[in-house]
Length: 550
Ligand code: ADP
Ligand code: MG
Picture 1 (spheres, rainbow, N blue to C red):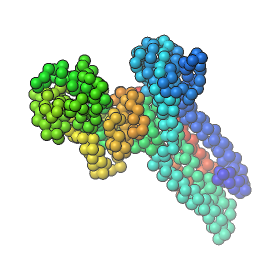
Picture 2 (picture 1 turned 90 degrees about the horizontal axis):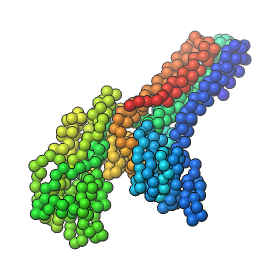
Picture 3 (picture 1 turned 30 degrees about the horizontal axis):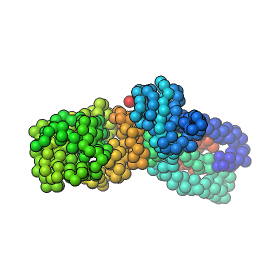
Picture 4 (picture 1 turned 90 degrees about the vertical axis):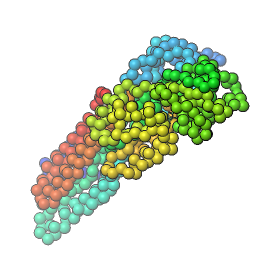
């Protein structure tokens, strides 16, 4: 509108060439803008193409093709080779390979068979699968991803809010000045043509159009490229905080390490090795902790599974009742808190102590491996300007310290309970100078409060962690730690372009305002510069859509 007014003003004062030029440039901007928006949409709709159209369900009347919403939990669905898995579920029959690239970015196909849990959105490759749905469509992974992507733009970044606030004062302010400049001075000096022209320039540049369009476009691009690489970012605001993060706090187990423990030694006291392992595995029957999984795997004998009650003690272990016996399984702190003496292991590793009815029964040593690529990932992040890396763990210092120095962490805290981790992150955030933000990287299971407290909560291996969708701000779908520096790089690049565009637009606008107030800028030149900025920043924003490599 301001553009049209400016054009009319130029026409009225006989600047026909300028009037036509303004209208032409205006059209050109529109064309480029709609192209840019289409590019942005296309990238997102490619992501949206993970949506399955139909599901083949086994019913009493044979196999029916229905929309995925109609499938109930417990229904058996058939997925032919080449088809997309419509709902999350467990394979009940079939041996095949599936491709999870649509969810996780480029990944190798994985072999699956009866008993495996598969996620909606993955493509079945080799042979037909019968799958029992264990989530309805709305709770399946595909729906969660789509919801997340659709809502991302609603979470506006600080930059966008600033621009909106700026526009609220800038536009009416400049419009007012336009009227003032065009009408007031000529009352005194009679140079109507000259001052109306100056006012028209003001009209022309009154809207912060280039910022309003190019900034969300850049964020869309950044979000899209991230998704392409299997990194989901919940909102433009989190993309921005990720770009600004200069402190990264990591959990050890399952983040820096694989979270796949192996039993390396069994040291019983007054009973057999098998028996000790059996008791520990039984007590850990219901626990989701990686150590519990390792113990269950190592033991062939789960004793009398019917009669077990157990509770997790986060950061400590478990307390279980097997029949009438009370069993404690966990770290030294757990035994200390319960006033039970224990033996300090004479070999390295994380010790899992076992006590039955308050009597010490020995310990089991478990160890975990550092993730492949962890060292490079951390170095890469430092190169990008991450100034502080911190590792927090509930594990013992003797295990954490060698890892900490191998990976060059700036700070290391061990033997923490979950609430200590929260306090540590809280401390880092409150006592932090500068504008950088604090990111926390965890495995998404037991660290929900810390993920929330951090400026950006990042979960690795989110694909296999239902909680991650609620708890995390940034989801790295697979377990590849190399995706972390990549996500940082994409976020920083996007944010850089946003700042470049806003900076340029501000400089151009104020230069034009000043110049035209003093009468240096002909209206045609103002039109060229202003639309030039719009076009440049739109094209600049499209750069965020490039393909990235780790
Ligand atoms: P991290 O900070 O490394 O992720 P956690 O907070 O998950 O560690 O656990 C801290 C410590 O508590 C573990 O190293 C282990 O000694 C003990 N622990 C926690 N849960 C269990 C469990 N289910 N069984 C045995 N030990 C456990
Ligand atoms: Mg943990």
